[in-house]
Length: 257
Image (cartoon, rainbow, N blue to C red; front, side, top):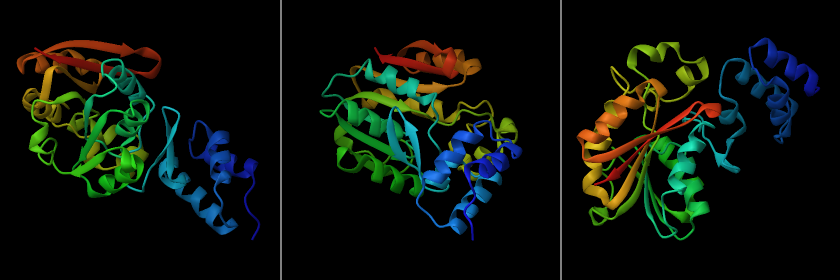
């Protein structure tokens, strides 16, 4: 069996609606595999499976983050959340990454701040296993619901809490791209009626975990940012909204007061 070549793969991907068909074709060809395996990978991509789940990794902040099938794929816009966190945390910070998914945010923060103490949490066991592979010996990953599995000894000691929590309103999940809607956990997107249910739960509990002047940083939607900031205020945090247009990225930062 002859292996598909770059032109034929790119043609199939382009016909399936892949915007970056040539780049994706090169990435698929870069994986060591038999012709039959390559054809199967192309078939999966044409069916809508995220490229990162097929090749097994995603580029994030210059790192190669392992991504298992069924795990939320880290988005480029979330790099803005990382940069905001890095600008606020000292080298020896205690950092908690909630709703960590593959652990992309925690792994990047640990790589840039090697003296930091990093913890990550996700409720999905598949994501937790993936995050543990990425974070390796640079931090600890817990399976559970938000703060629940964290050691009680962290109470009042966390300098930075970061969260790319779900923020898509339930009624809008059906309009998401097929690769996110069918091949990533619904819980990684569905944030309840207004998209902010999980953010409310995080903000309501964060103060007891944050150190004096510690910070909570949450990625949110641009049209929801004012509501997120209000949620922070109601829970004793001084909020500010930061935005990066070219990434379509919005982060609300809340400082413990």
